[in-house]
Amino acid sequence: MSYKLQFAELLPYWNVLLQGLVFTIVLTVVSTVAGIAVGTAGASARTFGPAWLGRIVAVYVELIRNTPFIVQLFFIFFGLPALGLKLSETTAAFLAMVINLGAYSTEIIRAGIEAVPKGHIEAGLSLAMTKWEVLRRIVLNQAFRKIYPALSSQIIIVMLGSAVVSQISAEDLTYAANFIASRNFRNFEVYLLVALAYLLLALLTRSLLRALGRVIFKAR
Amino acid sequence: MLQFSFWDILSNLLIATQWTIVLSLIAFFCGGIVGLILLFMRTSQIAPLEWFTKIYIEFFQGTPLLMQLFLFFFGIALFGVEVSPWTAATLALTFWTSAFLTEIWRGCVESIPKGQWEASSSLALSYIEQMRYVILPQASRIAIAPTVGFSVQVIKGTALASIIGFVELTKAGTMLNNATFRPFLVYSLVALIYFCLCFPLSWWAKKIEGRLNVAR
Image (cartoon, rainbow over all chains, first blue to last red; front, side, top):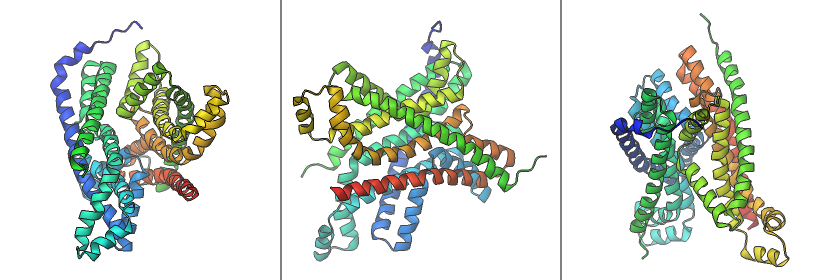
């Protein structure tokens, strides 16, 4: 190979990369929190709610899980304005991420809820706990403990998937990479650097979530 | 000016769907072959081979598929070789698929009781023979459901090939949108076609999984 990699040419753009990195992190954190909230509501509705609500949730989950994220993103960003709902690229990116993770976490949390023995719910109710107390203290408490690893890896998958939001020009890490590549044409160098940044982010997220899990679900 | 009717849009999308299917099939089968080779390396208990596969899997599972597509697209070009989006997409999706399939299959291999390994090695079978005649026939039964489930991820992954200019379903949708200015209709149809491709596979995977649980 006669070509020499020139990483030095990326140095002037460090602040662009940093801004992109911050955007990706904020996007991931916000959509994780909101997505899990949506997932908890969805899973609870599907297992304990009325049948019609459960059916709506099931359609939502299957629609999202069986279409690519990029199509969902395009639908929200390009399709919805036709109905009069115009969103900025940042809002569209956040919304698409929450809707996406919401569907996956609904399915994951539902599996956790279904693994809680019926006897525990009956025992809670017979101790005069209200429905909400049973849901919060018995069902969700145990469910989250069981599905925490699955949820963690889904969060990392969604974080990596967020690279796609650059396609509607939401200014994430990949957008920064595209921007720099279009300026100095060092495509391979910048994509390699950014790929490694994502890898590092994924490894960090994994160990952070593991540590967090140890704190939240302390062995009693 | 050329006018697009609903049927024009739909038929153009369906033509592009063929390329989504072709790319998915190639990625899945080539990924499966590479994945199988990696599986042998990963379970071989030869340290350098195991390390190599570990790093390989960590890289392809820990970076966005989009970045991998970019790296293949611009990386091969550094060697002075002309890269078509078709080549880059095939290569990136193959390697990406193989990393995930290796991890899925490793889980299945490791779920086989240790006694099976010991019994077969006491019958003087070599490592390859152990895998071929004892472990894989048992592991492949458990592997079917998650493998079919992952094929859905491969189909969805091919949508990203549109970004490097490969004309498949998503790219066709973008092009039609630019020509017709009917984004709601076009992207609804694109999503619907993906759903029709993926949902039967998801459903099938769930069904196989349910059947395995009954047997237990």
